[in-house]
Every structure is written in structure tokens, then in C-alpha cells.
Amino acid sequence: MLGKTLGCSKCGKQTPMNEIRADLNAKSWVCLSCYEQLSKKSKRLETGKNILANEYLKETTKKIVPLKKTFVCFKCSYQFLGYLDSINKKCPFCGRSGTVKEGISSSAILSEVEEESRNYKKY
Image 1 (cartoon, rainbow, N blue to C red):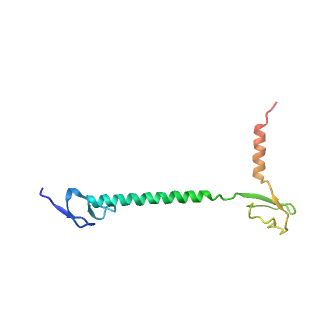
Image 2: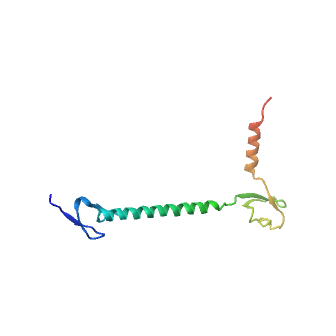
Image 3: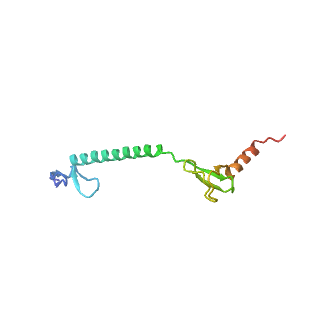
């Protein structure tokens, strides 16, 4: 088989068929040296994407979202969920100021009672 050649789509050099590879998109043919350059560039881009993704994750995990708490108005007994730092001590139901305090949710009370009943030893 006398040396058939094909032109590299990147550098244009006539290259023997046994030294031709498909490019990374598999749309054209490139010589071995161009293929190695494309592979290295692709790895650098992929590494850069991973570094950026890791930095983004580090930044987003630093921001701690406050948990919603249960609040109770001690004038009208209205219970509602809110953020501790954003509460303005005004009841959203009756509108009275200074009547809101942090309360215990009914699910918290139930879980506490269940825990106590499990720990209770029969004599």
C-alpha cells in the first residue's frame, strides 16, 4: 500500500493515513501533533471547569440559610413560621406590635412526647 495521505483540517499538512485521527468533535481529520494539542487544550478546559465548579460550591456552602422558626402571638394565639432575623415582632394576623415570641411547634411537642415515652421504663 503506497502511502495514501490526507490533509489535516487544522494545519493543512498532508499526513499518512496511519497518522490521521478524528478530531474531538469527530467532524474532521487531524494529524497526530494537532490531535495531541487539541487533547491537551480540552483537558485544560475541563480542569478549569472543575476548578470553577469547586470554587462555586465552596462559595455557596459558606452561605448558611437560616431555618424557619415557629412564632406565636401571645395576644391572639396565632402561630406562624418565619425567619428569626426577619421577624419584626408584629403579628401578621392581628397586627399588634410586641406580642410575638418564639414558640414551640406541635410537631416538636409530639416528637418530644414520643421520645419520653420510649425512654420511660415500666416497673
